Length: 156
Image 1 (cartoon, helix red, strand yellow):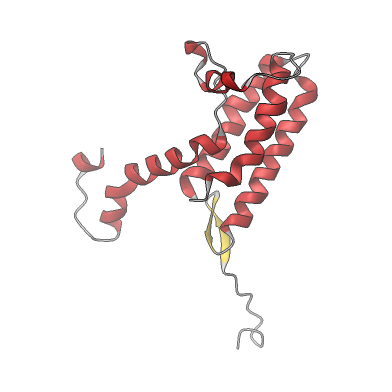
Image 2 (cartoon, one colour):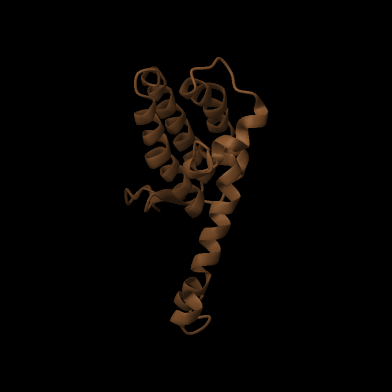
């Protein structure tokens, strides 16, 4: 019926920066590959402008993938390739080193005020970002679905 009426049926679609329906794994994979490419584009700039690169990663890209993690639940392993380029290429480049010992990985995720670099592990933060989003919107979602009355005290 839909072919004769020239309707285009979709089972998944990008919505408000996230994805609804089928194909969310492919959508996340595509976004992760875009961020990997963005990190690669920053690498030639690190030697001359390390602060600018750090700011670009920590103030922009990190927030993009954190948002996606909050709105789409996927296996944290989907972000492994992004973790790899950060640990193997970006962090060593920021410190003008060939490689950084693995025992320093957690140190780099600490905020700058705690002597860290503030560049978080995308796969390490994935589950926490999603859980935080679900718990902070749980009461509001229940009210929208008419499971209970909206109580602003409970929502805060």
